[in-house]
Image 1 (cartoon, rainbow, N blue to C red):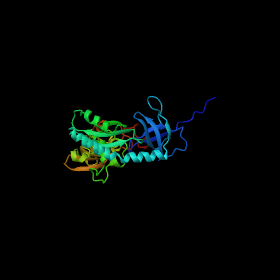
Image 2 (image 1 turned 30 degrees about the horizontal axis):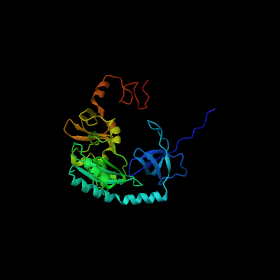
Image 3 (image 1 turned 90 degrees about the vertical axis):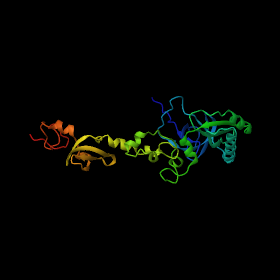
Length: 306
């Protein structure tokens, strides 16, 4: 007789607006709904997170199990978090002033984040150049100012800085994608721009963060899949207007632009273009009634002559 094993109820939490989602076991907290704030234990200590939703068919973590949600946050804890958040700007200004005083010219402090109870404060910074900045002096100063608070200096990347600062995107949108809806950054490469036929001019593919634009990944898979069935550039092909070479492809239309032997360029649907090598291979073989395939290999559905 098999035992009924209860499926885990896994909640997705985020700790910052548009932050990365983390999964926690919500089995011990009843009546939990999206929008609720809960307390959990993390590698940085106890934190308050917001429930975004629930994972229908979760994959277990590689090591160990899911950490449990301890309990719902109380009204007093929510008010306390708001009070500490109001002090973040003041702490940020103090940290920036001290960074200038100790000569950290290559370091830019972009944000200060208090934990919900004020027990920890993290200063997020970005460093210019390849050398690791010496933060010993500023760390001592900050710890002296925030005596009863654990101080952390956390380095972030240019994309994180653009997300924090917000503002207009390089494409002209009033709000950058990273500040509007992106919760995580995907790996992006020049290959994605090439696959979509986008100009490799740095002004065309670089975002306000100085890195490749996040939007290059949005349609990349569709273009890559569409290109699989199209002939490559400079491929020798045969068209209804004669022989030529593939000048360019239009993946989303499943069409190719062919440079014909007389110098003209014409666009053809994929089904009207045949690789020259395949046509040569068909010569000398008995053809099916469709006239397109050898006898016995026809996929057009037409019956062969008997």
